[in-house]
Amino acid sequence: KLATARMLGHLGDAKESAEGLQRIIHETPNAPEADEARLALAALITDGKLNPAEGQSNPDPDQLLSEIHKKGDKKDDLGRRTLLLKLRRQVGASRCKEAIETATAIRSKDPSEEEAAQVTSLRAGAFRAWSQDLLEKNQVDTLLPHLDTEGIQSLSTEQRTVLTRRLV
Image 1: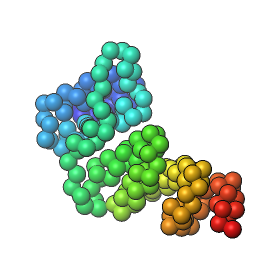
Image 2 (image 1 turned 180 degrees about the vertical axis):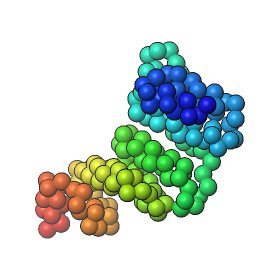
Image 3 (image 1 turned 45 degrees about the vertical axis):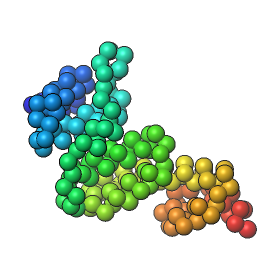
Image 4 (image 1 turned 120 degrees about the vertical axis):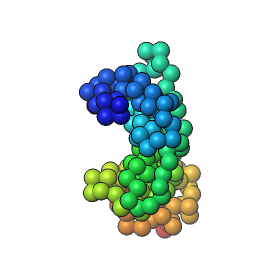
C-alpha cells in the first residue's frame, strides 16, 4: 500500500496518493509504515502538490512530522529525512533561527552527501535572511557569535559591507 501511494505521488496523482497515505495512517497508526506515510504526506503538502481548492482537507504537515516515531540514533534514516523536511518547511515559513538550529541537528545525524548539500544550501539562505533582519534592526551583537566561516560565506556582499561598517 505504501509503495503504491508513494508511486502515485511521484507520477503526479497527488490526490490519490494522499488518500492512500491517509488510509495507512488511519488503519495502522503505530506501524513503521504509518510513519513513512506521515512523512510522504507532509512532503506532498509542503511541496504544494495537493490542491486545497479540490475540496480536500489536508492535515497539518507540522503535526504529521511531530507524530513520527524517531529512534534518535545516527542511523535513523527516517528521523533525518523528517528533520530535512522540517528544515524545508522552516525556511519556507521564514523561521530562520529555527532552520539554522535544525540544520545543525541534521548534520549530527551523518547525512548523505546529497542531503548535506541540501542542508548547506537551506542553512545559507536561512542565515542570510536572519542576518538581514538583525542588520536592519541594528542587532549586530546577536549576530557576532554566529559568524563562523560558513556564516560569513552565507552573507551577501552587501551584508558583509553593512556588517563591517557597523563594527568600525
